[in-house]
Amino acid sequence: MKKIAKSNPRLISGGIGAMLLYAGLSVENGALAFFGVVLIIISIQSFVHDGYVKNRNKDSRKKYAFIAEETIFNNTLLILIASVIKVDGYQKDPEIKYVKKALSLHFHERKVDRVMELLQKYCKYERFKYLDIARVVNLNFTFGEKIQLLHFLIGIVTADGVLTKAEDKIILEIARAIRIPVPSLRGIYNMFSFITEEELNNRKKRNEEKKTIHKSSSKLKRSLEILGLMESATVKQIKKAYRKSVLTHHPDRLIHLGEEHKKSAESKFLAISEAYEYIKEYKGFS
Image (cartoon, rainbow, N blue to C red):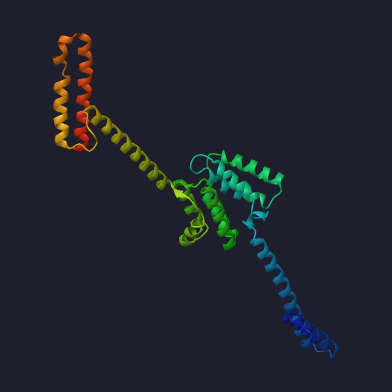
């Protein structure tokens, strides 16, 4: 059984247009010929549009397709990228590597090196009016290209795994300037793995607290050992051990043994007193 070819509406439309044009010219019917021309033009435009969409979709599958567009990815956009990189006061190696990797998907090695050299130069400048650049982007980029740009910029600032307050602020300002809603912006952020500067500081604080607790616990243990006690000792046992230690090691009790024994007793007595004061403060009794 022969397989019936699927009809293409555009070919049919073009064919009908051609027949109407021929018929119109044959009988000298201007209206009929004109209608035929219109059908042919519509058919041609349809084919051209399909080809454009197909190529555009093909390009969009490439990460950050706007980079490959010479009219879009220019020095102005590099200045915007440089502003984002150096917003927290310094440029970090992971951020530079992220940009270079993205460029490598679209340009040959020599061009990547030239662009990166220019980017490094821009990163050394004091300050740029990045919001003015963002407003230009808003006028010239499609919505999809603006989303890609934000994804690219967020990828840069989170490349080191930490989002600083300054980085979050500049991304939000750019998103507003290019008319990207905050929910869309947060959706892009969710595509990346990172912690905020505040979370990082809280982690450091908790680690310091743990170290302090550990040091305090160790000091308590040493103080109790000076009194000859275990960590499970009660307040009553601590007070009793302190009184006993003071009586045993008081310098006046050893004065008859000579100056050397007296100095040793004074050192021991001081250690007992300091240990007891620390234990009282730690356990909260007087």
